[in-house]
Image (cartoon, rainbow, N blue to C red; front, side):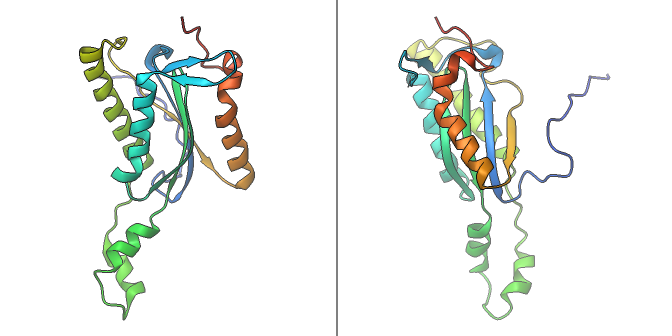
Length: 188
């Protein structure tokens, strides 16, 4: 059975498990506004579901010790965040198992399989969807059809300090630009 292949949005040749900074955007399926609303003053007011999304985002650094979290915002129907993958602590922790004599030679023997961005985001999407389903059943949260999140997500490798600053500003001011946002949907 030949199924159509989805076009990859990943950059050819880039290793998304490499150390670096990544700007992530994840959208709800059908762009449903499930996580709160933008107030008249331009601030995002997350509901219980929005708070749950933030809670699981913060769990990423516990689940994946190589991940450090930076700027983030829960929006009514999407999420933006910057995460950093840094394998230095992973190498240092594993290197303690070896004698200090030829540590540089022994680092090659560590067989560290870096955690990929896809597995990090996959875990986040799974945990949030599972909890959201539980809350639909127990707390009457608005249901969704088939899946909470769109199948894919958007990521951008942050290359330098200027890009970092521009993306951080974009995340912080996203609620103020909600009506002009490409993900905008009237929430009521």
